[in-house]
Amino acid sequence: MDLPVMPPVAPMLAKSVKEIPDVGHVEPKWDGFRTIVFRDGEEVELGSRNEKPMTRYFPELVAELREQLPERCVVDGEIIVAIDGRLDFDALQQRIHPADSRVRTLAERTPASFVAFDLLALGDEDLTGRPFADRRAALVAALEGAVDPVFVTPATADLELAGDWFTRFEGAGLDGVVAKPLDGTYQPDKRTMFKIKHERTADCVVAGFRWHKSGGVIGSLLLGLYGDDGRLHHVGVVASFPMARRASLVAELEPLVEDDLSRHPWGEWADQQAHASTRMPGAVSRWSAGKNLSFVPLRPELVVEVAYDHMEGDRFRHTAQFRRWRPDREPASCTYEQLESPDGLDLGEILPLGG
Image 1: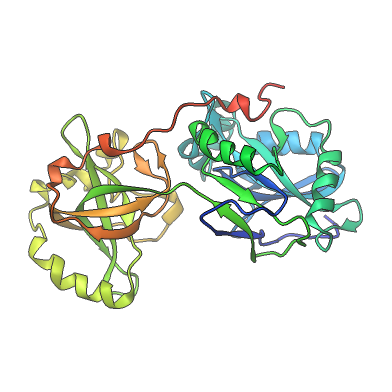
Image 2: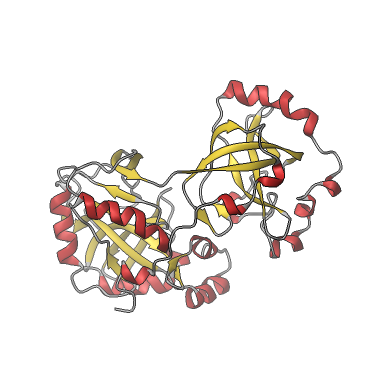
């Protein structure tokens, strides 16, 4: 492979802001795997955000990119998986599997798509020093004939339309919008773009904690919500604490430590069979190889208010943010019913799926 921009490349990033800025360009924020595609003739490499190649996990997409992208190019975008007209991040995560046979099976069952939103190189030309307006125009021209599963992301300069996208597109599994200055150059690993994400709050039960990787202080609190089945379901973690607060939490939580795991609502976590029907906080994850996922169980008596952006199935998509303790709330009142559910929207209204 011999391109003017060579792998690995750290993608350009975005910083969070509360309002959509008027910078001339807004596009949907896709909930997938950030990917930079390098194509040099028959050679195609998929580079991830951590700069490790993901090529082997998406053979069906590699074939399409080889067919549809320009002969020599570097394209920044997102790998997504859509099921029943909605982005499905859980299904996408399952595509990262060590067994080649499983990779081939999943490529057939849950084929991936690629949404392009920037062009870093074309032919022998390095475009990273050019303004984004030029790169966007070149991207649209280069992928003019692209069809499902390769797309160019929609974009607008209309703030009113961007606000409508921010509200409606969540129903298809997207998690906000991204604003990009038209005069900006491509700056790897720098937060020069702006992301606007949804933020909501929920009252959750604290049912355990994990130790911090440094040891001796709290790393994260494990959160639960009660479902219609009466069970406390693990929905995610909150970990946004200063180091001094992590230390003081140890003594505060010590009286609630449950020594008898059989009496804890997540006492089944050590039983791998239990993970087939529900995600326990101690489940093994291929994304956390070598990481200690064990937790210290707590009697489910504390309630905390956390901020989150959106749900992925029955869990918070990202780490929640601590807001305040809620001593006025009974743990049993912390149910899924308090959560907002965005109106459904078919992804086909955003991308020409099947086109």
